[in-house]
Image (cartoon, rainbow, N blue to C red):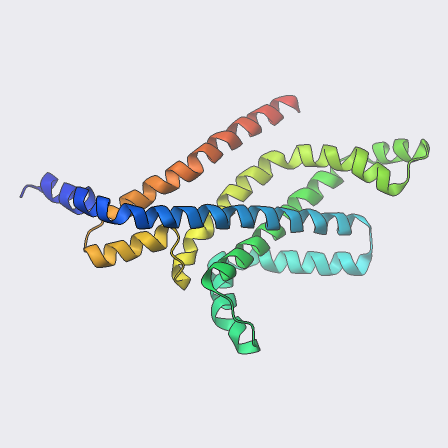
Amino acid sequence: MTGFELFVDGFLNGAVAVEWTPAILKGFVLTVFLAVLVVLTGLGAGLLLSLVRSLGFRFLNAVIVFVVDILRTIPALVLIVLLYFGAPSIGVVMSGSVSTWLALSLVLMAFSEEIFWAGITSISKGQWEAARSTGLGFGRTFFHIILPQAIRLTIPPLTNRTIGITKGIALASVVAVQDILGSAQTAVTFAFNATPLLIAAAAYIILFLPLVILSRRIETRFHWRR
């Protein structure tokens, strides 16, 4: 066999692709499910922490900043492994999927809290003072005037950060989760062929390319408006 034929047989094997594509498709569905959960919980928790931080309680703020800084320094893979292998020692047993979801949600929470907080603090004090001078209380001023502007400013960095963190779901294969990469690795082991890895790469492109294009358009749009 020529070098090209060896490449085709090793990476573009049709028989292997037909046999293992259904398993990778199941992993694709699981990856999408985990990604949606991570985005919803991570962004929701990050926004909640930024709201609590805006109340100005020094002790709570110190705790939030400490927790967020710690989570931003720990690699997602380390956090996944700690939750999966370490939590059972204190009586908390998690599946690989739950460990991955919780770890990535915590990481996204930490980064999104800082992004939301930066957006909130970027709004000038004059808008606070103007709203309060009209008789609006803290709550109405914050939720009707400050927060909408802050969220609008944070959309571009949040989108990019969210995509980057959700791609970390591929790390779930380390704790035996049959996501896209986990399914592909299993297929490679049994088929003795690298074709499933190319199928996995195509699956990731199908999943994340539309999000990357959308984030680019959002970033361009909001940059122009500023």
